[in-house]
Amino acid sequence: MIRLPRAGLLLAGLILPLTPTAAQHGSHDGHATHQTVEPIAAAVAASSRTAANVARDQYRHPAETLAFFGVTPEQTVVEYAPGGGWYTEILAPLLREKGTFYALQPGGRGFDRYKEFLAAKPPVYDKVKLVAFPDQTSLIPANSVDTLLTFRNVHNMVMAGSEAATFKAFYDLLKPGGALGIVDHRLPESRDSALEKSSGYLKVSTIRRLAEAAGFEYAGSSEINANAKDSADWPKGVWTLPPTLTNGEVDKAKYLAVGESDRMTLKFRKPLK
Image (cartoon, rainbow, N blue to C red):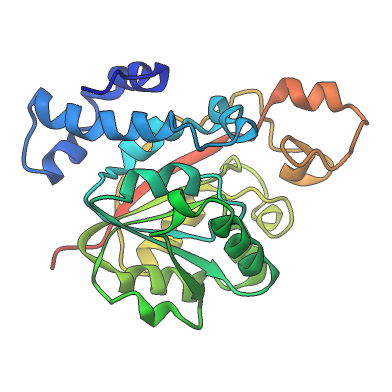
């Protein structure tokens, strides 16, 4: 029996609302929920995680977030644009023994850096399947993925104009009934939509429109990653806040007090048809 760390204990308060996760695995009983939560909590507590990343759990709530998206150790999971590997530190040990973990990383320098990141801890990351997007996406079989995750990346797609093609790729990879989990910086609905091209923030309605246009069904949202201190109107966009702190030492204490951005946590499903 694995003793649940603090993240797992906090997660206990989220068990009842997460009925879609239990339903996906054919049970609503406490035993099924325990099977889902305990492996995630153990992965979050893995000794292989770096201290700097663990310190950001207070803003990113990884155990609660992955449970909301319905991730389990037996799944085939894709993380799109894992970047520096923050979630890889959790997903790799979670999926290493029973599941399959694809890191779908856009090509270029980011791809090379991520490849170096994986090579640094081979006993932990030896089963991560690194795939270059979009050139090698076909290496992941279509209609084979249980859960596809992307954290704070949709705003980059919108700024680059690649959102429609990328969401289509997500749809094609997921199996019918599969889940798309998105976390991104939240722009209030009342703000000028033009800010989505420059601020790093997006409206919930924008992401819903993109996902639904690609064929996904909206499956719910969570306030797990909300931050009421974030006004979303900073001089240099979301990058004003930590961890980027674009203004350097100028008003640093102020921005540290705000913390990381206010984030939406949205779940979609590919229809069963």
